[in-house]
Length: 103
Figure 1 (spheres, rainbow, N blue to C red):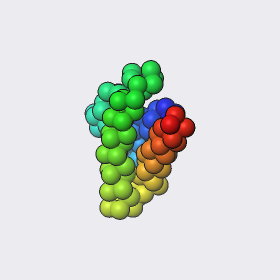
Figure 2: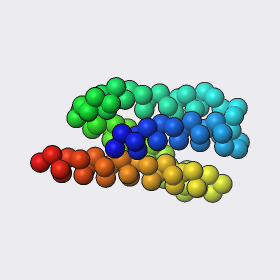
Figure 3: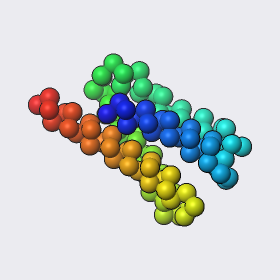
Figure 4: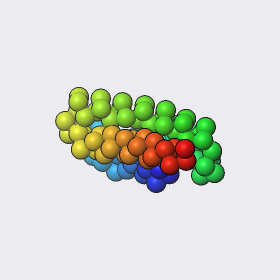
């Protein structure tokens, strides 16, 4: 679960900095803005705090929505958007399986 979250954080850097324009290297600020919300619950996730896991899932739903919109509207960035969608879904399933095993 933590791996999916960290992969989503890393994917934001890759998507906004390393991919060709309009999201290419010239948009350092866009990459920073995309990563900042993901840093908020990171400390609690590393500690295994349940509330942080919930907040991280809520944040990833926003990234899931952004990925769906990019895949729908921007065909050149459909593949990176699908990666973002997949990472968000993987986190949510991992969170569900973790909670199922604790009960």
